[in-house]
Image (cartoon, rainbow, N blue to C red):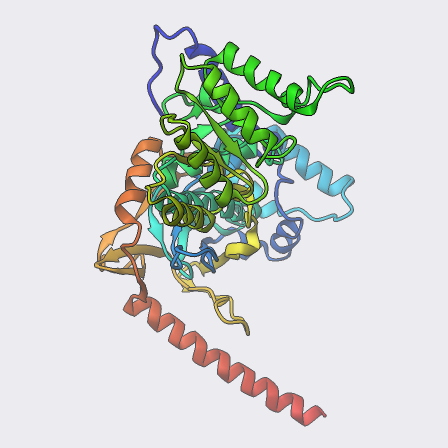
Amino acid sequence: MPNRDATDPFADKRAAMREEFFARLFLLGGWLGGTDTYKRTMWAAVPDIAIVRAGYALTMRKGLPEPGADNQLVMAGHEAMLAQWFHRPLRRSDIELARRWCAEQSAVRAFPHAVWDAILQDQPGEDVYLPVDIWGFAGGQTFLPQLPCLSFEGMGGAISYLEPAMCRYFAPIIQATKARLMSLATPRDAEFGLRSAPNELANLVLLLARFVGGRGRLTSNDTAEFLYPELFRTVGTIGHEMMCAAQTFDRSLADAEYEMMDRFVTAMGQASLLCDLVDAESVGLENALRVIKAHPETDRVGIRVDSGDIAGQCVLYFEKMRQLGLSPRMIVFEDEVTPEGVRKVYDHFRQATGQEPTMLFPGAGGYWWRLVHRDTVAAAFKRSATGNHPNVKFSNSTGKESLGGYLRVYGRDDTLIVADVSESPPGEPLFVKLVEAGRIVYRERFEEQADRADRTWGRYKRVELSPKIAGYMERFRAMRQEAIAAATRELAKRS
């Protein structure tokens, strides 16, 4: 985070809003119900196991199914995701209130007393921190699915509470990866709109992830620019609501449209003229050319196309402006643009005009929200160790078997290596400490994270298990087969 500038008249408000932003991500004021109900039923049933040291791992099981992703993902979102449980300490009074609610009012009358009694005994004050350490990839690190991206260590029953919140890493990771794909498709910055967001907080979280993955800066979110002026820049232009405001039954649609275009350019001195209100290839085209010719005092009046034959319209507007002797003007093209769609528009433009599409500017709109859900990457939070024993989750489905041990990830050449913390490092350590004893210790600037994304994209091709982890998995798989065979024989006897 940048240091506050005492001479900045906006510094105090900005600092207060940043604090409020992350505080709002803190799970409902520290209420212990910010997790799945079964967390308290499990650990109430086995209190002796609940308080033992344990390891957990967060894994993205699948890559992003988009052209160019090549099974890669980009880490992002620590600031927001960790804030859910660690932005501030829990309060003893809140914990006791949750205990009472579960005993007296909840439909499920269970509470993991052993877990919370042990935590409260170690921390006698009102402020209470979860006895949890978290390690993981630093922001911007490119990694591959099927290996842990975060590793959790501490009291098992306490770590267990984190599962729903930590699985939400899927959203910033997907967003950062999308940003990388868009940056590879175009040197222009594809704007991230506001209206598709389910709420303002989600928009800000994913904007920050987009910056980490591909340095996307343009947005229509004024709050984002105010909170992070070093990262974001707002863009504003004409909307359909203004374009149709002059319509009446006693004048032509073309005249009404022209008036709004002309008034906007006269007042603002620049515009991306929205040409599809009536028809982009006739009325809108004619009006846009008239407005551009009527304002020779500025060359910052361009075009925006967002419906119909986008590629064809980009060529049409470019050729018409060139025929009038106008200097090349920016042409913004939208309509659910994806990286693949950008390439198609660029290729069509090159073939049709013989020119490089330097004036074409993608507005990605809804692309940033497409596929942003947990199933896209199959985020999974699984127990990897209890005490000195590795644990795994078996599965009949390919790719769902978890890894056992207290896990770390290292890089060597083009390979990511998963090892146990007890082993000698088999390569460059890629995990950094994110949380220590319930306190966030990761404070890297977003620009540094974006630099890491630049350095690491395309580097890693393979995943390898260390001898110890491979040995764990070999033994567990053999034990599983033995257990299945024994159960099968027993069931056969009963049939």
